[in-house]
Length: 142
Image (tube, rainbow, N blue to C red; front, top):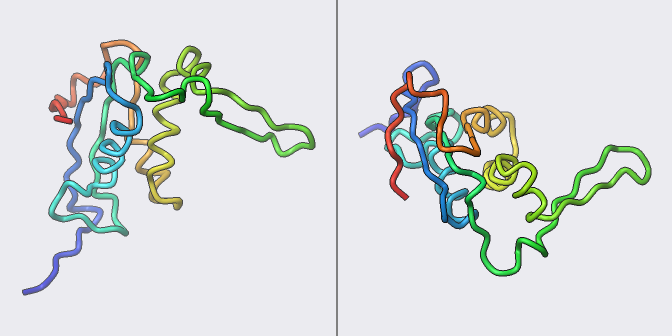
């Protein structure tokens, strides 16, 4: 018996929709990362993008456990001396809730070119509507 290796041309990408209302950020991010990588499929190959598209709705209603709203800090640096900026998870949840989920999922993907391609298949929206109805996304059970 031979092990099948997926090829880029033969992979069929599906679309899934997830409602993030009252769901814990980390638990949701791990499941989304697994779907983006394709680990839920039998043809999973680490060197090929076998994952699916994920549409996340209600990102502003996501929940954080413990005291992470005040204590969890995200840093960014411009590259210039003194160019470090910090933002708490609570500020990010109010200003850009889509970016909070995107950062959590990005941290759970591998650090390579393939992961950057996988992250482009994540579509996050604050409201309960999305422009991807033509793709007929299926509901992803969590």
